[in-house]
Length: 177
Image (cartoon, rainbow, N blue to C red; front, side):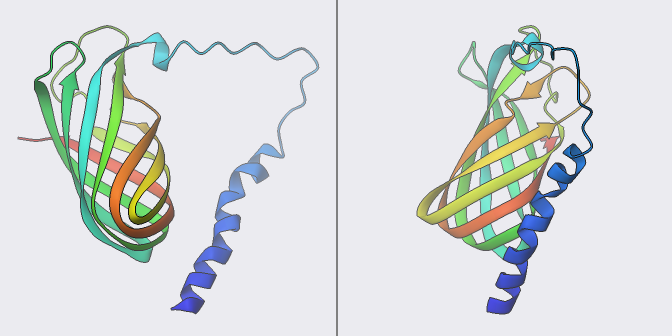
């Protein structure tokens, strides 16, 4: 077990260094770079929150899969508008167990409109978590449908259990029928 964990930890720097290898080929610019102005996700407005409950489970050293149930609630009204089900898959170092987790995302759109099922799709990125009793995690996930509604890119997870994870993560959401 210790040899497997040591091998997984040794592979982590190789996996995370891929981005720096690609950036080594960057072109040097002679004119000044344009100034970046952050206007939020596509200049949009926050239209609500997606509150997700993630089922408990065990991390199997190199990954895990857990069921997720989410509810979209509008920022204007307080009653839930839309429900989603799906799965959270992690690939990387994921050791331990969690009994339950909660993830809340802010939802943005270019206008105040929202259509049922708009948040369905595949979100991919990375997750880092540490849990001893109660713990937290950070997620950087992008994706969804090709529509104009977006989830906040960076989110936090609260959870109970004993777990350590540094993984590539995907969340698949489907409108609940």
